[in-house]
Image (cartoon, rainbow, N blue to C red):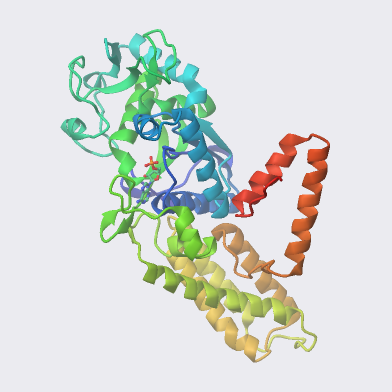
Length: 458
Ligand code: AMP
């Protein structure tokens, strides 16, 4: 399997020990609802992980949650809300959004605020090794002490100065030095050997990955915007602290979701939240839309293109439905009247070749589209035996596991059954409440809320 490595700018064969992969992807800064640009990145990594697992790799997928940051504090002040309450509220929203989008392969979400000891230890190591210094306003990483800075982005150190997240501060030896620990008197702050304060953004990630993976691991991912300076800073911090190189074997970056050529972002205000989008389109349509473009290429968002994605997905799912219905019929031919197994093999070869080539989902999807298109005629002609229909259904299931949307649509429970199930669930919850099993009762309410079913206890 080949994957593109941002570090070498080349596609490389994936080689890992014992088929085990430690993967870290930068998680969100939770100060607002997540938008569909975030979703693009996390759906892409979800499919990458699904495919790696399908190919027999055992993947541990770790993601951090930046639950304390200047942006969070600023937003909390504007709203008169406690910063950590605000960030944890939006973290919950983010996790609900991911669930709705069927992004469900992260093994562990690590909050920055729950890793303060690890962060403080790493900052201390950097000071002890001469890569960081303490000042009145904070502890800074001395970029001149780490000679390789910028090897991922190939960018010049001077660019660091222009970066929005690097503050000007007369205490710094060099304006390019970035904060590892910001001394802050106002809440929320944490105690440290250098005084009360908060961590810098870059150190959160390396402290978290070191805690779970050690100083070196296999794959690090994120959106394209994080290459510089965030990922370059991570490399500098961790390689300086451990003395071991490289931090990771493979760097993977997703392209942007753009709106009229500009990156969708909270700061530009040109965003659509995941919640808003899911009022117009189903999660499956959005996944299909995202996967119709290669994960490294930009996507230009428009409702028009989403509608096209919806049509294409409908066509594929219609075939899926027809195969399932046909499979239930009695008057099927005992033998195939067309060489349907060659069709299946041809499809699978194309699909897996595409996925093995740096997770080329648009080619994989177009081979699925062609395959279903060819099947339609054979289905109409009643030319496929029951055994072969079963093989097709199994193939669809295999593909569904990788792509995370259904080819054979599951029955929508808009029928009586959904009402009956809902009554059953609410009855069970009432019994739990009567027995004062609040945790379980709350869990049911929260899970239903993530499906947009809101229960009110009266
Ligand atoms: P943030 O919360 O801004 O740190 O973003 C969380 C993740 O979403 C990062 O990996 C970003 O690179 C990614 N991301 C943010 N905006 C976009 C976008 N418009 N398109 C694709 N990925 C994005």
